[in-house]
Each structure stands twice: as structure tokens, then as C-alpha cells.
Image 1 (cartoon, rainbow, N blue to C red):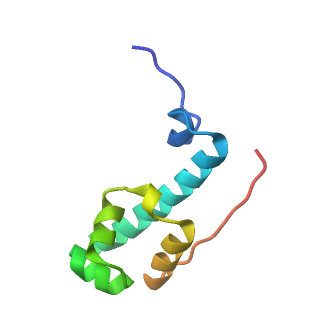
Image 2 (tube, rainbow, N blue to C red; image 1 turned 60 degrees about the horizontal axis):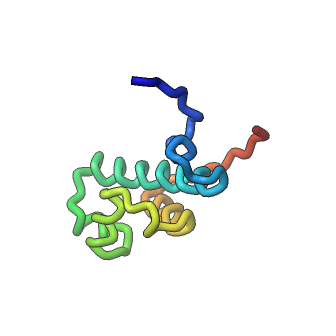
Length: 93
């Protein structure tokens, strides 16, 4: 089996264009934080939906990693409702 060194972005590694891969990685990280928040507080999907002001299927989609259904704006709004701040750091490559 051949081992390939990661670029640091799994989405780039599996063939997404650079710009799309960056966006997907950001959304994946935001989604992971929301899922962790729900898990750490042992919220049911229904309770999490009420807390975030969304439907239960929306929480299910989030926990199942359906990245394409969420925008960065939506995810930041959810994190804000959870009392979290999102910081952006921009660096040259």
C-alpha cells in the first residue's frame, strides 16, 4: 500500500479544487464544534433543535456531516447561540 503525505486539508487530498476545499474545511470545523457542544451537554436532537432555533432534522443533518446543507453564516449563528466566538485568522500560503 502506498502512503501519501496529507496536504493538511482532507478535501484537497480527495480531489476538491483548492478554493472549495478551504470552504469545506471551514464548514467541517464549525460543524464539529456544534456537534461537540450538543454531545458535551447530552442534548437530544430535539432539545438541540429548540436551543438553536432549527428543526430536529436540521440537527440530524449536522450530526451526520451533511456539509452541503450548511453555510458558514448559518454555522456561525448557531455557534453564537451556544455562546461561542468564531475567530478568523488569515495567513499567506
